[in-house]
Length: 354
Image 1: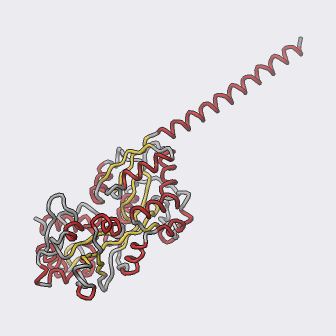
Image 2 (image 1 turned 180 degrees about the horizontal axis):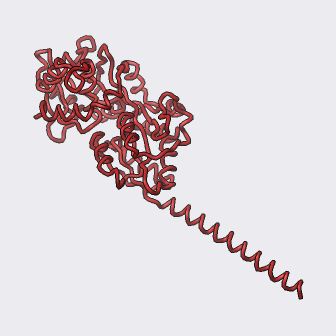
């Protein structure tokens, strides 16, 4: 009888273990399905001109379901700050290291080290792993090289508003809602850094920036900075590195690039995961995929980016390589720029763009 009870007890125990294992496997399977079907909200300032559609198409092939929100750099930054206490975005990418540093200081980013980070220059990596670098970006003046020869082109931003026949013949930003427009401003202001001046800039610096805006031309509604140049409305405009091959092909124009003696602003676009009560596994997997050599290589080939993932750099557009050789990174105190950008923008919009 004892043996019968013993056999019965062992049988029940064995069945219980099997049931537990089955439940565990079922739970894991359900978890995987939930992760696979989980929507990821992505905020970015780098998804215009077809980039967003391409991102969704490529990510869908990998099982990701994205909701992509397209905003200008400053607008994106301000939206994230406004949603700080109840973040909507799971992932954000495209802003530069200065903007991400501010988000980090405000405690808005989760700690995460993507799987591809070992393929990136250590000097570009945030020591706290709150954000990770994706691609290098530069901002500079441009002109139609078929109309203006290189030796006849201007040499600096100051030449734009001190050359009489260029009055209203160059494009200036209409607002400072984007990172590119801000770079146009701080590359000039930083030549007049003065600890005793208004917002850290000398009176001369502010006066010259005022002349830059007052003597420039603004875009017509629906027009882009490069289109205004291509159709002959102006002689000079500005753009960013990865835009060069895209617009040259689209508009059928060969652009010349101006490299001032002090160089051009260079930033690095980043990706980060927003801090939430629950950080989804899907968000982490998406970031792991976004920075891979496979995707960054495709992104670089199609949209002219300069990836920092070393294994993706062989896919860099040749035109982008040319422009990188033609331009020199400006030596800037980006911490100082980051601390003053918002106040500079406010001052410019209130007193110069009024």
